[in-house]
Each structure stands twice: as structure tokens, then as C-alpha cells.
Amino acid sequence: MSRAEKIVIVGGGIAGMTAAAAIAGQGFAVTLLESAPAFGEIGAGVTLSPNAMKGLDFIGICEAVAAAGVEPTRQRIQHWEDGRTLVTMDRSTQREKYGAPYVTIHRADLHNLLTDAARTAGVDMRTNSVVVDSEGATAILDDGSRVAGDLLIGADGVKSIIRQRFEPTEPHFTGHVAWRALVPVTSELQEMSDFPGIIIGPGAMITRYNIRGSAAMNLVFFARQDGWTDDGWAIAADPSEIEAIYAGWCGDAQKLIEAACHQPMFKWAINARGALPDWIIDDNVTLIGDAAHAMTPFLGHGAACGIEDAVILARTLAASSDIAEGLSRYQAARHERATWIQSESNANADRMQGQDADMFGIGKAKDEESLGLFNYDCRLEPV
Ligand SMILES: Cc1cc2nc3c(=O)[nH]c(=O)nc-3n(C[C@H](O)[C@H](O)[C@H](O)COP(=O)(O)OP(=O)(O)OC[C@H]3O[C@@H](n4cnc5c(N)ncnc54)[C@H](O)[C@@H]3O)c2cc1C
Image (cartoon, rainbow, N blue to C red; front, top):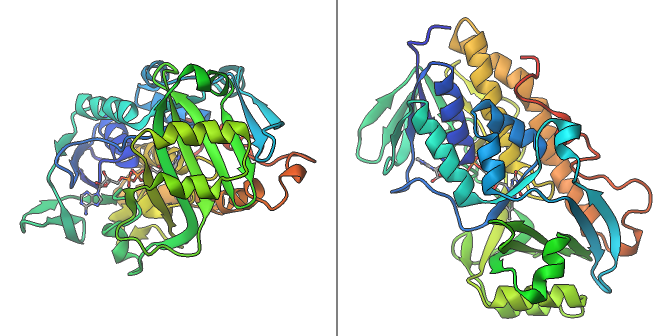
């Protein structure tokens, strides 16, 4: 395909920034439009499984991301009532098994490296660019200006404006709420930092993993909730809410709650999207990341899927004779996997937050590794 084609990406989150670096790396002229005044990410952690890290290798930052993050050697699943270990996951041989590491990292550290990669690849990066509409492959900004492209990529997240062209519906509340906090690793938390993991119980669970040289831990307290009536999707949280939800949980859970209550904590509505049957309009508009397939976080794979989308799209565009062919090959390569992971994420919520934690791990536990998600290699997948 001619490299004269102009590619416009709406949204500079993990998916959009990876796509910008990957597509510009194939020689295309890429403009990235981000509504925020500065590029960045929220103050929380993210897990990057080996399949995601292979995507980051495609844009040349796998080892830099691994160095900025933490590679856990083991993780465990604990019982809510007495804290006993139900299942242990060996993460010590991820590089050998999958050809890439398993990394936990602060989102801002990841995003800085993605932004550097996009800048180095020559992307025209524009902040304060709020896209309010689009026509064909042209983005229309809130000041009335237009950015014309030959291909428009919606990477604008779960509330995507570009997705409105595919289906004029809003995201739905999934019935899950997450309270997030970053805590320093004190001597009280050292043992839990040395052996990170998830504490599971009826209708709720607590995830913890290390970031920033294991000096800090990312905590996420998940619980089911009937509805969401708060104003906005992310609000400052009242610690008494999690104290009430996790009353009666084990000593490890209480230590995590105590630590979280001394840090800024935010409460998030987990919103998602249904599967979209078609990701292409008029042979020149498509979607990636949460805009295409926002999912619940119970397999830790939303960002990973966005990274995979980005690399596959860069490869299909580079390998095709025109944009229409590139998009068609992108959809053929990605749609089934992303839709399947969306549905498995929901199923995993039920597996992890089942009514009877004693039954967990009896028989073969299904998780992101045993489902085979780590084997996928977006650098080599046939397109
Ligand atoms: C509690 C929780 C834990 C998670 N943990 C993990 C995990 O461990 N591993 C994992 O892989 N995934 C995880 N996820 C999922 C992951 O966070 C998301 O899938 C991922 O961040 C989505 O990236 P994105 O770039 O598609 O969208 P976003 O991050 O939403 O980025 C969209 C970007 O577009 C910009 N934008 C929006 N609208 C416009 C507009 N109109 N004009 C211009 N710009 C616009 C936004 O400002 C933003 O920068 C988790 C999610 C949650 C809620």
C-alpha cells in the first residue's frame, strides 16, 4: 500500500498510542488527536501479559517496559475467610515459555514509553484536540477545525465518539465496581508484596501487584453492586464503603484495606460494551481498543487486546494494496479473538467471585494463562 495515505487516530490512550507508533513505524503519516491537555494515564497499575509484551516488542519498547515495571515470579489466589492459598501461579518461566515477560507496571510509566515511541516514529501528536464528530475519514474538532485523513481510527475508549457511527448506544454498567489505590510497601505488607495475587470471596475480590521496583503496590477492590447512581464514572471513594464490604474477610484483606484507606482512593463504575458485529465503515473508518470491545477487567486483558489490535492493524495496512483490504484483513484477524476474550472476561468474574470460594481450584482453574491467551503473537500471527 502507498505510504502517502494519511492515518488519523482519535485517542492517545494505550491502544491509540501503540497504534500511532506501530503504524508510523511502517512508514505511514500518522496524526494522533488527544482531547486531554497533556498525554498521560491515570494513577493506577496495569498487568501486561506476555502477549501484550510481544506487541510492545513490535514497537521496540518491550525491554524498556519490563525494566520500568516488575516481573513477578509467582502469584496466588487466596480464600477470603482464612487467607489460605487456593492456587499458585508460577510466573518464573514466562520469558522461556512465551518469548516475552509478564510485567506489572504503573500506567504512567508505560504511557511515557509509548509516547516516546510514537514521537520517535514521527507521529504528529496533538493534545487539546477534542473530536466531536467525523465525516468519512475526517475528524471534526470542537473548534470547528477538521483533520482530514484517508483512514480514521477510533481509539477513543469506552465512551467513543467514533463508535457512535457504528451504533448509537451508550456503554452499559456491568454491575461491578472497583476501588483503586496505590500504597507504599511497608513492613506490614512485605509478605503480601513478596507473594502477590488475588483474594476471592462471594461477589467480591481484591487484587494486588507490585509496581515501581516493588516499592509500591497497586490495589483493586472489586465488588458487585446493583446500580450506579453517582455522578461520573470515577469518584473519590469513602473508605468506609470497602470496610463494610470486606468485614469478616481474612487478616491479609484487612491489612490491604488499612493501607488503602490512608491513600487517595477512587471508585470506578465498570462499564463495558457489547460485541460489535462489524468494525469497518465505508472502507475507511475502524475502531481499536476499548472503543471496539470494552470489556470487564477480570482477565486483565483490555489493554492487551488494544495493543494486539494496534500491531495487527499496522501489519495489515503495510501488507495490503489499499486501505479497504488492510481493514478487512485487520477485522478478519482480530474480531473473533477480541469478542471471545470479552465474553471470557465476564465468565471469569463469575469464576473468581463465586458463592463458594472453597470450590475454586478444584479441577483445572480457567484463567488467562490456561485459556491460552499468552501464546498469541501479534508480531507473527498470519494476517
Ligand atoms: C479496574 C481496571 C483494571 C484493569 N486492569 C487491566 C490489566 O491489568 N490489564 C489490561 O490489559 N487491561 C486492564 N484494564 C483494561 C484497560 O485499562 C483498558 O482496556 C485500556 O486502558 C483501554 O485503552 P484504550 O486506549 O482503548 O482506551 P482509553 O484508555 O480510554 O483511552 C482513550 C483515549 O482517548 C481520548 N479520547 C476520548 N474521547 C476523545 C475525543 N472525543 N477526542 C479526542 N480524544 C478522545 C481519551 O482522553 C483517552 O486518552 C483494566 C480496566 C479497569 C477498569
